[in-house]
Image 1 (tube, rainbow over the protein chains, first blue to last red):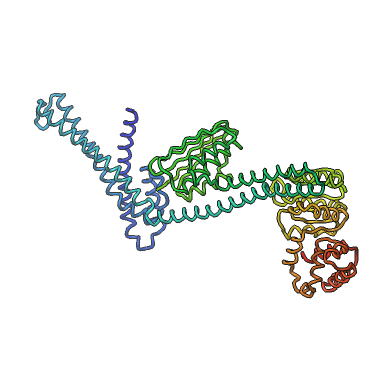
Image 2: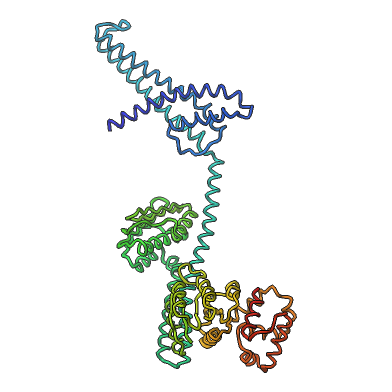
Length: 368
Length: 214
């Protein structure tokens, strides 16, 4: 704890001192560069502005602000140098105060009388009080300079409204295309389900009936009857995989209970939803759980799957944890489809699945 | 007839094996993928193979690739391809080599047991068997619209039946006309389409199919 405070203090003082030095450099640069601006910014101006801004960014730990143009870098330098000098001033006052106080104390200890003042109790008490107040004000000023610097950097270098809008549009375009792809992938899967499953079964059934008619065999008719029943079951299965009707009628908890029931691996299900979320949120949550449970059983060799659905604030969080072998591929078709579905709802989807497990799939779905 | 099957659906494969056995055919091997099929045919070439187009691993057209390979390696082995849906490309590829004994049926046709068995017999005997739906699409999408427009309605009927691989006798029975009338129509068709009418009947059927698919 003490070490952390000391380190933070050193960083504060060192950073501010460095900031004051670079403020001088920034000021000098701005004074040289400003008259050249009408000349369509020569190369050394833009390069210099970017370099100096880069130094400030590293000093302030603002690596995450993203891209900014040459002009914005220059504008930032022009605005930030007074703040840097302010920090330097505060540092100077701190040093001046420290030297003055130390000098006075040393003088008293050696029997002297600085400014003709004897070390009487009222005088020492008065000076100590004033000194502590000044020290506090100076430190507060230093902290304010650091805050101001960071805020200035974010404001002037970070994305502006236009940039934020551009990013949002790019995001929307991606998620929209993603949804179209997810729909197509889903259709392809349904087609395969129908062709490879149900159609084969029906052709086999028709063939059985054909053979039964040719041979007049009761046994073949009986087999055909059984086969017809299996085809009906398969049809119900396919329909359930396409969309579980229970989700609309009975809600997420009931539909998830069916998933748990049908899973070959035991599923521990906690579904804590005070109010029913919007249908599209329910659907996304449902398919997230089903895909994750299927994967846990099919690929991870899990022996227990834990499903938790909670609704803090205006969100629904779905979290599926299994004790399987991990190594899930987030680029697989099932998980990609889910990611797209969730992105379209402005949700967040994460899969952590280190080799050896455990796999955690989490979807955070906003429901404002 | 000696038959080798390739069908990845266990249910259908077993059904086909039983059906063929009941009809007195000998099923030499029943395989679930293209590689096993090729190995089985190489080991002991049958009279005819029945091949599903869509098989593992990619579930696209590996069955067709295998069928074409069999036609290349064993020209004497008939190849009857079963497909989920009609694809003109499959038909034209199957017809691309000048060998006999070739067929392309929609998979559902297996349910019409008699039609399926007839088709199998024809292919095994070196003839052709093309699904009516395949022929309909070949006719609908052919580039030879102009020469075909000179055919009479009756000649188009005969052409369509012939393209399915039916014999003259069978065409005559289905269209309620005499065999000599069928022959007359066929000669007229070959004249109008300017196709050489020499060679045996099955050669002429293949010539017609190739013409439609080209």
